[in-house]
Image (cartoon, rainbow, N blue to C red; front, side, top):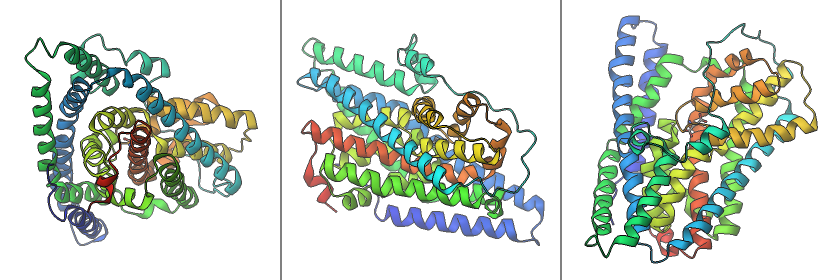
Length: 418
Ligand code: ASP
């Protein structure tokens, strides 16, 4: 097993804290010139943050490809793939539906938009539309694999890797055991993940810093109730709903699970991108949670792409909030429609920062709600995006454990180790 650098979690937390403190110092110190502030923002926080993000993203495509191909090509029985895919997708849809329903219920009870006093912005910069469900489904089947690789089309890459893995599996006796070469390449990429992870404390210092140095923290006042409710819902979903799933379906101790998940959670939090976090989630799920590598290498990248419970919670609550501040009463039938739409759009949401806000447009349009209202939540969305991305990837790992348990492919000893 490849070893993670010592004290990594502690150092990442220190990186977050220092990044926050240093950037707040620059943002709130009136004696520092604007020129110096923008220099620090650009050449320390932005530069360091972007380099770190690029390094993480650099690994996503080859890692997913090699781990899936090596996993599938070494399976003794490829017929288990069908049930694994069905269970994975079914569980992803179920957890997302639960997530958005809870958000709608809480939104209807607590009415976060009822006392909203600030004026509605008149216009926002035009936001691009999200991907429709149709496009998402067609996109699973790439017409050009190189284009899929270049454009990071995760579902297409997963699909091709599975096909390639099956073909490799069937021809291994003719190719001089070519699958073992993929196995070795996979090990090399895992090592690369660890090498890049060791820069995480500096990376998160820059990522948190660039957020604080541009926006400060005052932006939260206007929409305080929305923000507080959303954060509580996200925490509730992660700690309560997932814990139930983990305890009763995966039959593992939720506390042990979350202890092992510290690193991917911190990575998701600082990068706001489930896709950029795939390498770390994959490493944790297969090495620390004991999910069989074949299961993990399918469930994790697919989950990062289609499973976004945190995003669905935001979309549910934001829709209710915007309806309330616009004085529009939603009917029960509309609530049900929102659940279905949020499940569908969270599948089509790209696993990158702020993507959830873009697909929120689809839901608002459906109910003729004012798109300008997105401007109200846009300012605070960056920090909420960090939290919901952490929830998104925790959901992926939860489902990975459940699927592995149901297939008898969960190594229970792994989670008990320190
Ligand atoms: N940033 C989220 C993710 O990558 C997507 C979103 O909700 O904006 O998981």
